[in-house]
Picture 1 (tube, rainbow, N blue to C red):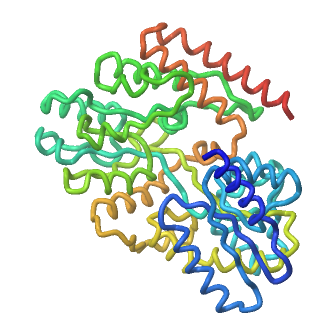
Picture 2 (picture 1 turned 90 degrees about the horizontal axis):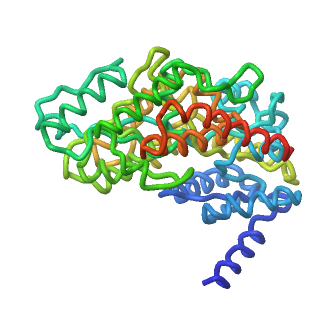
Picture 3 (picture 1 turned 90 degrees about the vertical axis):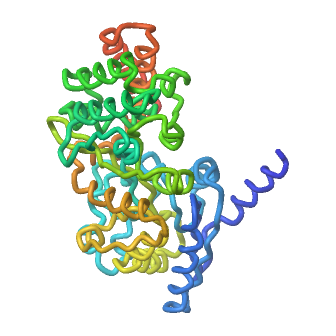
Amino acid sequence: MKSILGIAAASSLAIAASAGAGEVRMMWYSDGVEGEVMQDLLDRFMEENPDINVILDNVAYQVIMEQLPIQLAAGEGPDIARVTNLKEQAEHWLDLTPYVEDPEYWRSNFGDQFDWMRPDGTDIIPGFMTQLTLVGGFANKTLFEQAGVEMPGEGATWDEWVAAATEVQESQQLPAALVIDRSGHRITGPLLSSGAVLKGEDGKPAPLDAAAQDFITRLVGWTESGQHMRDVWVSAAGTTYRSGADEFINANIAMLYSGSWQVANLSTKIGDGFDWVAIGSPCGSAGCSGLPGGAALVANKNTSNPEDVGKVMDFLARQDIVKEFSERTLFLPAHKGVIEAGGLDFQTEDPQAKAALEKFVEATGALIPAANEIPAWRYANAMYGAMVNRISQAMAGEMPVEEIFPRIDSDIAEQVAAADGGQ
């Protein structure tokens, strides 16, 4: 197997080389059917532009994460790539401004995410998000109905959702009322919605303030009382990610807080087992915000065909093309015009999945500015890791919750110093 993987990696390096004149190579990974959809779109592009041949290199996600950075660092790589590691590789992206037909169109429709993927302090057009992901919640509608508990409505707070889910837990004798994925990323939206200021004026992580400490204290309290599912957090160590989706799929909880990427998973695994709905993000004093993220299509500044690359990117960034891509792949669009126009017709036979996707599209309108800044923040991962590790220790009873706050601040400071020292 090792030799096969080695051949595959070498092959990936070979196929990913920048194309010659009249050719554009695109490195692409797929979670589902999006590779097939992209090939179809590129075939139509080439019909309209017969002088440009676009070669789509479908690769494993590990190639994007492990091989592409090596190629970029060596001044090589594909002309265009689909990536999720946006900010840390920003120095390698081509400024598309001189190569796209209408830069203002790009700024108007994709500009809110440009800082996620361009070097700090620059105003380049680096590419566009092929899809957004959004952190948010799901509720087991059948369990709520069986318990005779009304689901909280728009604007409901975290306390109101936990209280309602707890009523369901007690009525239906569930192991827990809810679970939030074991992830610092996942609790960042609730912290910001609670009014926490996580990013200091100097751009570095701020010490956990009263709002952050209050939400974390409540989260640990919900865990100690058996409302929040303890095992999801304490059965893993360090910064290990663990999703609570299986607990929701198995109807062990009334509420899951995860994200839009779970929609297809829930649809496939739950089937007609029970009714479920997306609920957006519960509210705090500062808003009802999840945390955005996603994947982007970016161009390599080492390309020898920037004009052709610009034409390909212009085509794929067209409003009608973005709308079609989103509908066929069940991804949330990042195109402002597509979102504002509404009327997305997601191509799924599951009405619950379709309704959930529409709910997540609606929830993008509730994002608060502080949440939109996080994907472009280079210290976000340092904060995520420290929080999930120490909060888990408090949930496990290894130390009182009030003792984890200075430790989180200290852990983050160490990570920041290490990151700055590596510059």
